[in-house]
Amino acid sequence: MPIGVLELTDADFVSVTGSGVVLVDFHGSWCPACRLLDPELEKLAAAYSGRIRIARLNVDENSEAAVDCLVEEIPTLIFFRDGREIERLFGAQTCETLADRLDRFLDAPAPETEERFS
Image (tube, rainbow, N blue to C red; front, side, top):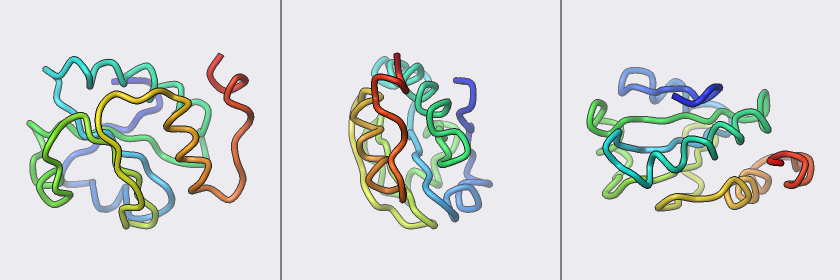
């Protein structure tokens, strides 16, 4: 698991996504595109530490939350604010793409992309 990235289960999904801005990566351990996201999520977790939470949920081990969120393919990245979905992306994404989305959901943008992910 990437450093700073929470590993969610069905049991804690609602409590973790219920407050603040949370990015959840619905993934499978066997999925190559999902594994490509690991370093990107790690960078995001470091850049946004204390501002948002970055989390992962293995859909094979925790299918209830995936079904409740209507996840049909992986990787699926869902942004939540106070328990409500605010955006959804599919497939491997770059730090910059995810950071652009996160900045829109926060009151103040984080430092410039080059500083955050270099």
